[in-house]
Amino acid sequence: MDIRLLSTAPDARLLAEAVEAYRGAFGQPPYGEGPAEGAAFAERVLRYAGERDGFRFVVARSGDGRVTGVCLAVLARPGDWWRDKVAAALSPDMAERWLGGSCLEVVHVAVVPGAQRQRIGHRMHDVLIAGQPAPAGVLGCHPAAFPAQRFYRKRGWTALSKSFPAGDEDFWIMARDL
Image 1 (spheres, rainbow, N blue to C red):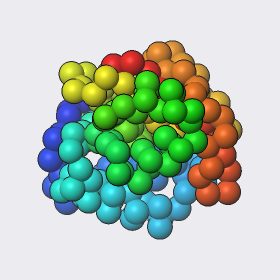
Image 2: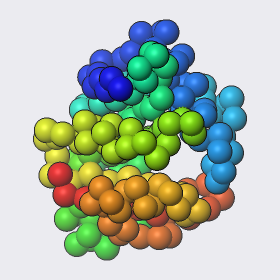
Image 3: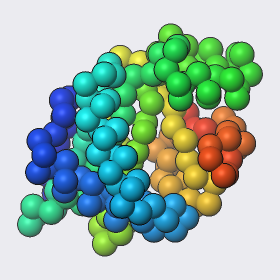
């Protein structure tokens, strides 16, 4: 298993492979994402690489070279859309504690179905958050994604809110000290 951290945009070939891994993971229930969401993921990676501070993109490859997992994170500061929506959903004290002047926004952690439960996510997660300049990390988790919830809890994340409005469902907001 090879795990790599990129701080710049991946090349076109790697991005295409990452999109396939993302679609494999998020095509499953409860997400049910399709090709349009895969394209949005690719656009998000490239946009965040060019516009957001603290861009971190982790890619896991199996021994045969296949991309088996991807993670994406950026620094979130006041004025960033998602960070400000989360701040509005939390009490002022919680928002200050977890979001402060900046936090690590974990955007995606995805492992292809055939590679799940092999600790690939654990290894990618640890590379993703290692050496962060932000004091805390924050993420959103689908309320019916029970394996993801267990994964995050095992990695030290705690639920701050179970009713963050995101689309048709309320997502969990989770955080941890870095």
